[in-house]
Image 1 (cartoon, rainbow, N blue to C red):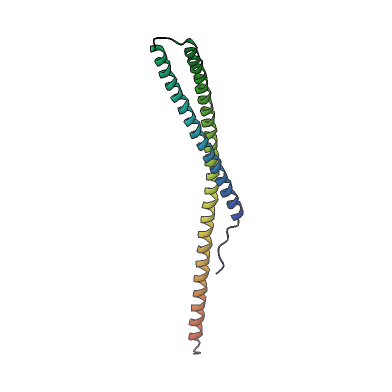
Image 2 (image 1 turned 60 degrees about the vertical axis):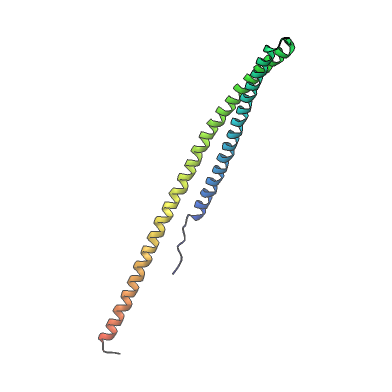
Length: 152
């Protein structure tokens, strides 16, 4: 029996490789997004620490104006950093959505070819079974005719 060979196997392999590449890109973006979210959390944590430091400075008997001014400038810097980080996260999330669509499209292309391969393989084995059944029927008929002629 000749083994089934899918004519479009090279195309299927290419599409599977493309899907894998898109999934790798998606994984990198998810990793970057998580890293960016961690960065934002660190900024928020720094804001909270700076706020408590400012409160501690304001409760001291002698107010150090230079320290208060530095802490206030740091508040402004941290607020700007937080806004910028949120923009970066939003942009990365948009890129993530685009990459998810690309992965979905690549997955659909692979699935279409896999279904086609499966259908062709079923058809191939169905035809093979039919030809094998016909061959057995022919052999049986030939024996029957051979036995009917009286030749043993």
